[in-house]
Length: 538
Ligand code: NA7
Image (tube, rainbow, N blue to C red; front, side, top):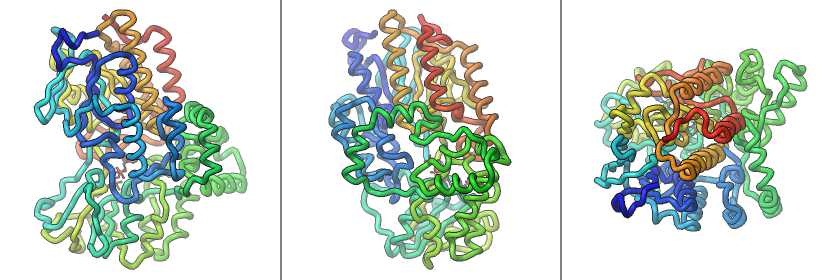
């Protein structure tokens, strides 16, 4: 390991990019190991996703008690979640509580966005530069930049001419925003918009939603956690996390091993009805095992949800627009909602179908579609993210011989376990492509990522290795495995951020890992136990 005194004050064992859930945990683990680390964070505080996404209605879709860090008994004992699905302000308070508890901020530089990271073969160190002119070097480059952290704003003609206010949901202003008397336009109807629209509709002058593709939304069924339940949760954290560890998606829900077609209709509908009435994602990730892989099995659940949606909307024409027709249930991220459909029953909420009348341009006063001109005080982009690879590509990352990560991945990512890529020695990626964390109750997988990576660094220290790199063969095998696992499902048939298909010009290829988080963990463990088979050390 590098002696910082010998190599200069800005040289560390590790540089961590990002101070969200994985970045914070990296800082904690590296410090515990006696290593030096510096974190660079673009925001002015910790929290990552929960720091940036301050829009009204932002909250967990994971059960709160399955979402927090599991590594510290003290944190588990001291923190109390107030609701089954905590809101963004509460989650940000939680992450600040963890940062305070372990005094993490002293190793993080805030308001500091990394612009460049390049590997120097001469000394085997990574050098990092920030937009604010900081420089640092380290043996290990640990990226913790998030899955959904690079906002996507479509290039609408005339956007700059609009004289009102406009922003993306992930850069919601830090000061309170009063929309009570305002005419507001929201573009997008993904998981973010579903939460936002429900809240904004309650207190807005007039709201117009521009929808391209409707989604299948499932009721969240949130409620406060009462005292008795709180005590039960605290007493059963070990079981909760064990359940998550053994499940497909890192949730407390897991698939039923029966086929949807293996039971009669009455039993199937009863099962769907029960899951529908339960909290959270059980209806999606606790359903029959084949709803995401077999078209016929999927049709049974798709029809069930369509009926549920229709029932809640007063105007049949609006209902027609809000019921998805073109993709099977569950093949895009399922938004969880708390009154979303009823928002459209309000007189001051209007839905515009962009398929029949696409947006032509922004004007000084609003938005012009092919059929109508709308006037707004505020326009909100709920248009999603350049997911999984976007935040990495924003940084000019260069490995051996100056090879650029963005260029290497132009035809789709190639990785080993989603945590390393050939040509970029000593660089580890959390929440990257091909990593279980991209289709997971995220912190469950991020903890696994951080623990696996730091244990690998510990292994290198014990063996006096200074250089680790995945082999081309292992990278090829893992990449093939990721794509084969996706091909066994219906996901690749649908355009979504899972496929990179939401970004014009982005290679359409599956970015996540849907082989199951429990399988991912097992594969990582087997590789580590086999002296990190698939990696070379020097
Ligand atoms: P999503 O799920 O990518 O949704 C983005 C929404 O924006 C979606 O409805 C898009 O319609 C719409 N969109 C994107 N570009 C355009 C243009 N050019 N015109 C009109 N509408 C557009 O992002 P979210 O932020 O909601 O959710 C991301 C993740 O965050 C989510 O999966 C959770 O994990 C949390 P489209 O469907 O592409 O037709």
